[in-house]
Length: 513
Image 1 (cartoon, rainbow, N blue to C red):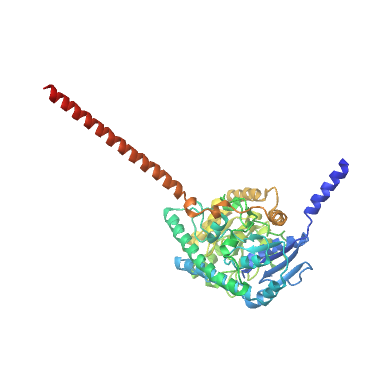
Image 2: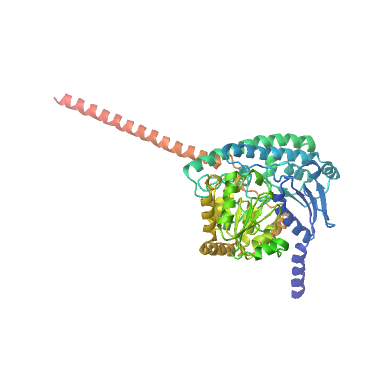
């Protein structure tokens, strides 16, 4: 009987982890860099045997039988190569405002889509809803209609306007603000800057969410306030890790899973292979991501890059679409698309001159390549600060770039001792008890196995006066005031007593005289 019980237990545990789940993934953002991360996670869920319905702008060309696409691509344009280089507070205000504007537009595209509407009418039964947590909450309304427990997913760090729903404290003195620099050691000006910008972004998100609520009511009918649905998100899978971004004060239902999108590298081929292998002094890779038009870079920055190419012994690989630029083909390889992973993994790649995008930073850390971070927009200033503070690289601002400063910065990260520090950091990055992808899948399946657990951080339900201890402060003040009043009364009674005694003494002396 003992052995039968053991066998039964083993099979029960195995069966528990092999249950096929019906999952809907709601990914309304039309940014390819985000979907690159999310796609790896979704594919692993497929590989584990789960059935997926994926609502996104990026339908699969040949999906497997357990993958059902609900495409939003016909009604949108991929958010890519669309922004101009500028650095200013005005740009920040416009970018953050437009980010939420794009969120409202994504909301309209999502909810008005005929395939989505048909899906709603079918009333499918889902065990789990995976909802992107970025610049729109309309996916939460859709998940509510499906009556499924929600797992949030983020292809970057937590956006500033989402902190409160997860009970994450924000303090400008040590918590980076995603859209500006300063890292975890901000100056007085940067702390002031963060406090103002944090208030601004939360303010505009509040009104953006109210407008989205109207769209949700239009297409989905009666749905609770989106922020109340958001507070019931079971878990958030956030794409960061303390080795790169430093320690954070996260509650238990926020799980760090950064790094799972990095695939095994393949061998470079063709002309690129010949170019790299012919580099006696190694290569430096340059890429500023998919969002910024490289043609919009200021002339002084382009000139500084070209000067560095000619002044340094290394060869350069530059992701740039302007092939008309006259450059020495023996020193620089130019293409509008490059196999970034394969380049970073190559033993002759010595450094990465990057815009500070999170995906690129994770890939460079994975393959132990130092970064020169040149932040342009979005979360890149915060990422660049993390890159520098962690020791993965150094950062250089646009206004600092000259022929001399760029060469000096590149030489700094090419120093053997600097590269050795990056190697040690990379070893720590890889040293995990469970891989990032297995962590993400485990906790996703955990929610499906235990949907009725209380995952919610208590702080999200605490009134603001309790959170800031205003009621306790009032009690302290009341105690102090009571003490002061009692002291005044005691002193007054003491004086009265002495006055009466003095009068009696005076009267007694008068009678004696």
